[in-house]
Structure formats: structure tokens, C-alpha cells
Image (cartoon, rainbow, N blue to C red):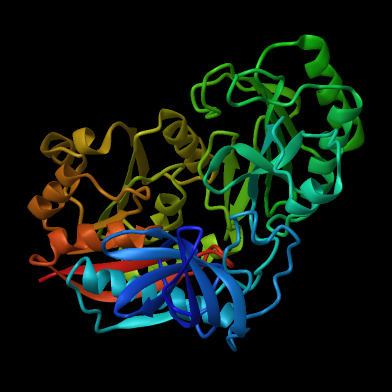
Length: 470
């Protein structure tokens, strides 16, 4: 019965799931209280167990589904429910798209106080599986042990894993058998490395005690058919490193860029690490329209190549650039958008905080025979100054594609000062996008919106907003 306590948890019956929420959860209501439910699909009717109570909301898990939503489907992946990577794989794709677009509109309304009068239908991904061009897998000596294993196996010998972290547990990793996010030979390479490491007693990383040889495996593919593999080691054991790298070189001849790094830091970020090319080239090549981009191990590039092209085409169309326009591309990364729109503009200025990315952008512009793009490295809030604008020309149009945290207030203040005729704001986080737009809306009218789904089976989405000077 509703309200019945069970081990200090609250058990609720016949609860209908009414909507989706942030971070892949769903929403129910009981006696006027909002409840966030893991693993539910809007339209489900469930018995649920409330395991966390806050003043403004509760959190719950499903005990039993009494009635399946019409939107519910059978997940394809055997790791669904434990791995947190594809939380919406139990929902049909058309419903995913509808909920994503509604979430964007709700964020703009509730956070930004903005009503969108003209928004285009969300553009879905043709490929809803095997769409990612980059995957990172973690080695761990603390494998996630399933309930079935605990109940049925007296002595579990292999506790190593190569896969993904369990959500909310930094030291537990799921040993992935098959992942549906990246084309083969991704699974084949990961499983072969896992098996080889076990056979040759190569130590898997212990994140708590900071020891163990094998730390991380990154696999990048490209639409040009090239393949990059980067192995991250914790310490420099030349013999064991040589053993694994030679195995990869000999058994996966399709690898065009075979790299490794030795990272003894507390975290596994590689941006400050030396990357060693063991075999092949130091990069792979991605192609968009008639442009080519060199992608190194540290390069940022949209993880869904097909949808990236659609995203950039949409941004270019919405920007309405003319041959007389000076365009600034803020947070340009490796300069993909800047180069993509360059033929439409008089001049394009790209700015980013990562020097390696700016170097790559400059080189790729040269390789693509583009002469009207200039790229600058520096902290956006500092480099995007009055002096910088004086030297490079006042922008007619600004394209901004900031990280998930959105734009710094000083950057927004500069946008308000410049008063460009149009701002095209691309965001992977509609919540911070809405927050930033709220600071610009008195000066700018939000004229159009285009949402593009880059990440099927997740709650993540890319959104483009067009701001026209009032």
C-alpha cells in the first residue's frame, strides 16, 4: 500500500510515469510531490521504491512494471541497466526525439524565460547504433560483479575489467562484452586486448591505490576509413608495453595510427601528456563535404560524424552569411565550423583556449586551401577583448559553440557591447544555453531554433539558436 515503509524506503504502487527529466531519468508525481524514477519510460505504470528523499523531490527505482508504455521497447544491449551509457535504449527512437525537443523548449522557458515562436523539427540520426567515432574504455582490477555471480559462483577468480565505469561508482568498471556505440573492429579490438592482457598477466589499473600497468584504451574511427588506437599505461615498463603494442600492430593491420602514452598522474586526461606514435601516422582524417580534418589523439571532434555535417550545415544556413561579413567562431576547437562556413564569408576569426587545437585548425585550413581564416589561442574571457576586436575587425556575425558549462559572463558582456547583427549559439547543454540567452534577450530576439540529435539513446542533444539584433 502507498506509504508503507520497507527498510526505511517507501514503497508506492500504481505510479504512472508522466514525463522525462534531466540526466535520463523520468518523472512521476505522488500527492503533489515530484519523483525522479530511474529506468522508467513515460506511460509506464509501476510499483516503485523511493530510496532518496529531499525537500523538493524524491528519487526512486522501479520495483515492478504493471503496464508497459507504448513508447517502451526491448533494449538491444545486454549491459543495459548497469552501464549508464544508453539510458534511453528502452524507449523507441521517435519518442526520444520528441522528449529531447520538448526538454530544450522547457529549459528555454523555465531557465531563460524565453518563448520560441519559430522552431524547426528536431533532426534525428539515421544511424541509432554504431554512430560514435570515438570510444574510451577503462582498465580496472575491480570488476563490477553481478548479482548472479555473487549468488552462484563461490570463488570469482577474474576480477579484471575493460569497459565502462558503473554510474556513481568511480572504482567499479563493467567488463563490456559488446557495445553498440561504435562500428567494428571496436569490440573486436577491445576484447582481444582484454584477453591478451589476462593471458600475459599484464596488471589492470587499481584506481584507489594508483597502481597497475594498463589504464585506458581509446579507439577512434573516421569516415575516411582510418582507425586510431591509443593505449594509456600507468608506468613505463618497456617490455610489457612493447608486448601489447606489437600484438596490436600484428593482429589489427587496419589500424592506421597506433599510439601510446605513459600517464602517471592521478587522473587519466592526456592533454598534458606526451603521445608516442608506435606505428603508422599520428592522426586520422575526417571529411566533411570537400574539407579534410586531421584528428589527433587530443583533438576535439564531434563524436557523430554524420550528424556533425548536418549540424554544421544547419548552422551555416541559419547564420545567413554574406560575402561581406566578418564572422567570429568562438570556441572553435580544431576550426571545423570556421572552415565549413569560410567560403560564404569575407573573413573568419576562430578562437579557442587549447593551443594544440588552434595549431591543428591552422594546419587544416592550409591543407584545405582556405585563406580567409585566422585562428588564435587564449582564454576566451581574456582574448576576446576590445583590442582584439580592433585588430581583427568587428564581427558582423558570431558563431559560438561553448563547452557544457556555457559562456563566461565576461564573454557575454563583450557580446552585448559588440552588438553584432546576428549570433548563432550552438550548445550541447540546453540548460546553460538558456541561462546565457537570458542575459542576451533584451538586446537580441531569438528568431529560430534547430535541434539536432547527435546521441541516440541518451538524453544529450545539440541545439542551435539564432539571435538577431533587435
